[in-house]
Length: 85
Image (cartoon, rainbow, N blue to C red):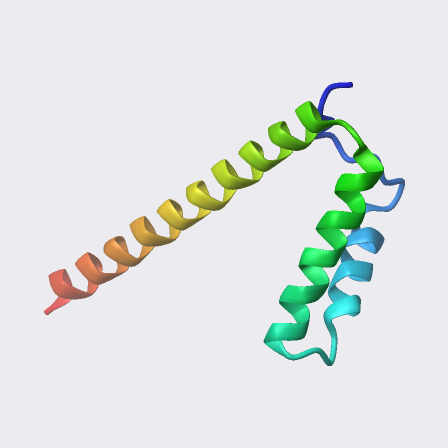
């Protein structure tokens, strides 16, 4: 089985909302615990180590890309403010 990166939800916004709502009212620690539990439940549902490893690698790349974009935006904002003075 190959990793599917296309949305499999008829209503993806509803799926995102369900995840967000599951975290409502939780502390940061509880929220992290929920995320970990959800990952383990879904990893078990996938049941394919190759697909799981591919998903982990993709998630890490996306996380690092987002972090790099945020750093670049902060540098741009800082440079723009410096240029205004």
